[in-house]
Image (cartoon, rainbow, N blue to C red; front, side, top):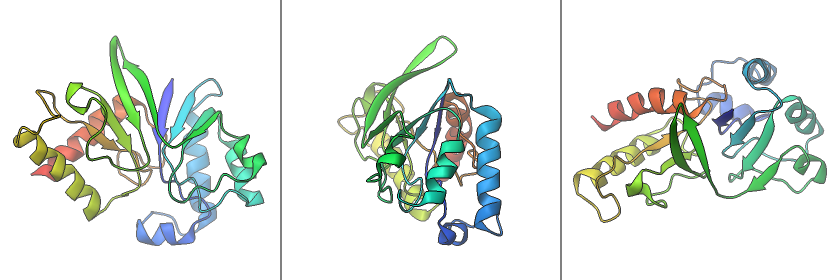
Length: 200
C-alpha cells in the first residue's frame, strides 16, 4: 500500500498556532501523529512524505521520533527539511526533491507527480497525471492556486487538453488528511470535494 502526507512540522511550536492545529502542546500533537500513522501503516507500506517533516534533521528527539514511524518512508524534500545528519538520512528509503510514480485504485492506474511545492504546469497535466503537493497548508495561497487551475481549464490553456486538472494538497492539517497518511483513493475523494468548493 502507498500513503501520502506532508508538512508534519514536528517539534515546530509555531505550526500549532499558524495552522490552528487542535493540540495544546507539541507532545500532544506528536502523540496523535504517531498513533494515527502506526495504526494504519505497516512496515511493508510506502509512505511518501512531501516535505517539511520538521525544521531540522539534527535534533536527537526528531531522529528518535521518526524512527518510530512505520513503513518505508520516502522524503520529497521541502524548504524546512535539513537532511545533513547521516543518522536522519538512514530513516528514509529515499530522499529526493521531486518524484514521479504510479499508484492504483482498484484496477485503475494513475501517474503521479510528487513535489513539496504546488506546480503551475506539471508533466502530462493535461494527459491525466495527478500532482500531489504540500507547502501551502490551509491558506488563501492554496485557494488561489486551485482557482488558477480552474481558470486554466476554463481558458483551454495549451497543456490542459481535454483532461480535468487534478492537484491535491496532502498537508497533514487539512480536514481530509487529519494528521494521518492517506491513500490516493482517500485523497482524490475527499480533496476533490474540497477543491470543487474552493473554485466556487
